[in-house]
Length: 138
Image: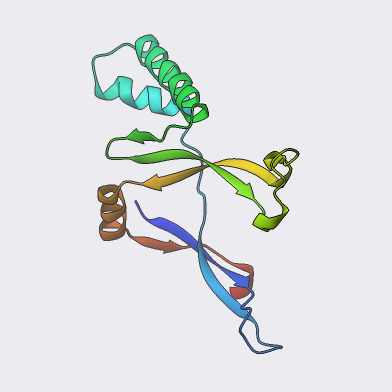
């Protein structure tokens, strides 16, 4: 199955003024959701769908629990998840030990995913590409 992409406009901060730039971006072709995953596992195995949904639901809850405990969640041959903070820098000299509140410098919280090396290698070596229509190529 090919990876679909589209040519889109972009800015180049080092580029010359008045020059338009373009780049290729992967295009989402749909969602592979929890139900679809359960259906595919049921089709490929002898396990009932109810058991599959129960296991996936429990896995989801344990992943959330361990992420909030500060652990990196490693899913073998898929990748690793870890909580990531988006924080602004501050001078160390402004840290009064009695009144300093670090959370005031935290802008947000997210989850970082790092794909497994073998999965990345597989995608990079087995990919096929398909361009979809773009406004820039009208």
